[in-house]
Length: 196
Image (cartoon, rainbow, N blue to C red; front, side):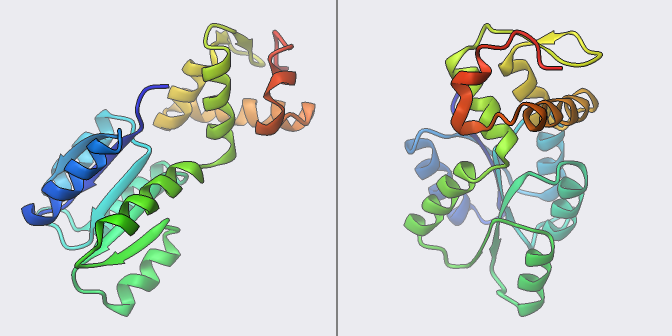
């Protein structure tokens, strides 16, 4: 698998630059946006494992950005940064199922740990597909009513939340349930050519 991708959305350069630098040193690919509109454009064009969002952003508010992302890709891992730390913001964050909430100023060490944990705790299907793509990148699986897909192709489409990805998610999750195959039994899955 390629390096995990982080979208860092922050309008304060003194926060943005050190966080981006540290994340890159940890091996992550980092894209940055200094306002909500730019962030939305990057998100619509790319695939991100974790999105870090400041709540107070120019052009498009952080809460609205989170709402749009969660509406289209509910499994997206989001970490909030807040300069205000208002209780209302925390309640909204919990209701939007964000992974973590940090009040500024933010210490780098717990922040980096939260990013790492957010990646490790993504939804089970993505973790399963990631392991399959690493162990058998060329193996193809025939999904019901679909063409054959490699694990990497399924992973990419599901991660993007595309229409194809949504269909593949449903088919693949049904297949995993039918065969009772989970992330801890990947070797069994590699014995199958078709998932029906």
